[in-house]
Image 1 (cartoon, one colour):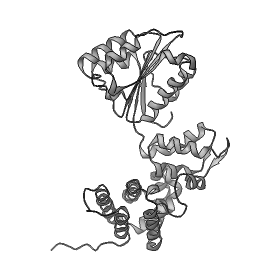
Image 2 (image 1 turned 180 degrees about the vertical axis):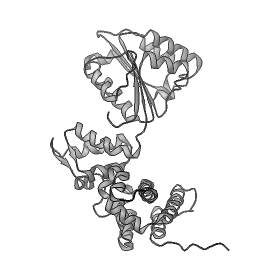
Image 3 (image 1 turned 90 degrees about the vertical axis):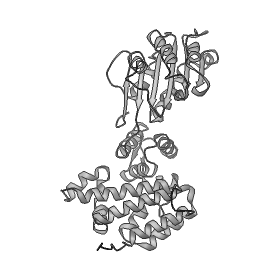
Image 4 (image 1 turned 135 degrees about the horizontal axis):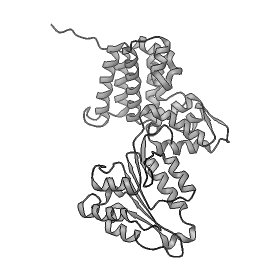
Length: 362
């Protein structure tokens, strides 16, 4: 999929592919004997393995010919025993190993040797799928090299924060929907790079939209648990305007609705906000064009950032980033005693709005 970070190699070509191209092959009934899906981003691993599980066999063929195993319950010999079985009343059989990263012997010498041997001579009638989430095999070792040579290998990585809006736009486009810039950024910033949650939230939003419609910020606010008046973006606006009353109203709302306003994600958004302001302070070109270029997807908010730069000079940004790190330690229980999330945020916002005088040494 465009604008996403992943690597794919197949047994027949060294050309890089996308998860979208794998799905295209699967939809064309072009199945490979072995798929090894690994990496930090589980969304694509689930997307491809779920498609194979749902569509590789017809419903009446699945009872005898489709097996789903779990890594913590099996070893390599057990998996290969299933993979070497011939199909019954079907052209193929499917073996899916979920949570393959939990297989005790996958990276041990004997297990690696047995799997490597199978990769070199797989049963053509079997589709063997490994779902190896959150980490990757060492591609320098013999097994990693064998998988790269003889299997369809997909290695996924988490998106960077600045790649998420493009992913959201592409996902909406694939569903025949357009998104306003503010709606896309609201989803991207509020949910972050959790692609599974993003896809689920977008799918829920699309239930009320017709193909060709436009997803706007009001729909996001009403359906993703973001209050129109009391959300992290409005808190940022209150900080820029130095509006302590509005900031405290938002904090009270967060305190009354903790499920929809957890502090850790909000701290992350505030950290990104003040880091961005500091970055703008430090860049040589502070013209509107230069600032827009640095802001990228957020270029349309350049006037807000210009105002934020006036309110928060570089040293204030550095101080606030320090306060955010302290608040992060407090909410995680490392420091701060028994302070609740609302108290931590209330103290943090007070420090943001009221600079602490610096005492000169000597």
